[in-house]
Length: 95
Ligand SMILES: [Zn+2]
Image (cartoon, rainbow, N blue to C red):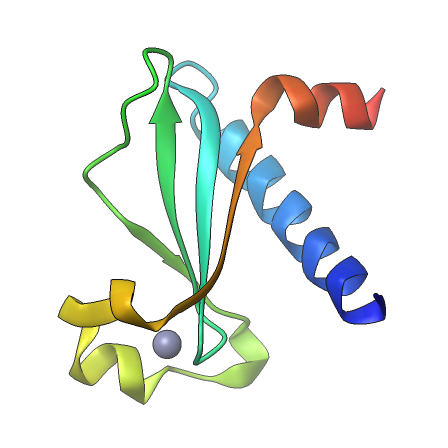
């Protein structure tokens, strides 16, 4: 459970950063954690569609990810966890 908690804190923090950067467009965020510890994410728009642009987050202390740099086209096959955070849920959690 400890691992899950730390992990969620990071995603909540990341969601906050992204929602702050895109206050209008996104109703949620879909996060994909990869086996290399990178987090890929797509914004979920108000109509429920996914942003075709996939963002990547990686802890700076871990340095650049050679796996993702060398073969990022098959990243979906390396997803180990997937979670969707909705802005409404997030705001309720913060209140
Ligand atoms: Zn990676």
